[in-house]
Length: 208
Image (tube, rainbow, N blue to C red):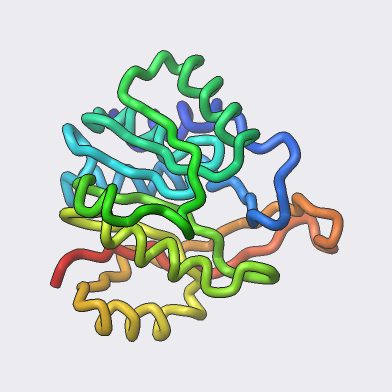
């Protein structure tokens, strides 16, 4: 599947009807999702035939994209029932049999249950703004325990040094695969501008 084709499929994925501010629900754009997945697939061969986890999967754009790139199975982990309902509908519309969903709070996950159970973990975690400080690092730590091979994640560029230091502490290798501009559309009442560009790093973590 070509990159353009993947992006055009992902444009048909439904997203949040009423995003929840406390959960920092911002959809990953089809363009960013397609670029991430295509890179993971073509440059690192970490999707096809692999067991993939998508943490904080929301409405499922990353899981659905991974399933289209022939993941063996992609399991989406998400706390919000409404998001999972939309994900379920999306998976049915695309007639995908290689996705599964799990409702859970990733901050209180029995880590041992999923330790090294997945080849690859992909995620666009909450950036930890406003109410959720440090949430991105909790997600990352959980992801690293779950993955056997690599974790791919989006983080604000401004936090790169902090994340690099954590990666060193945890004994994992961090690579900056790309710097992206994450266009955040105004989805909440407190947003004054129509959209805001945030500088975001697309990172790969692997066992050092």
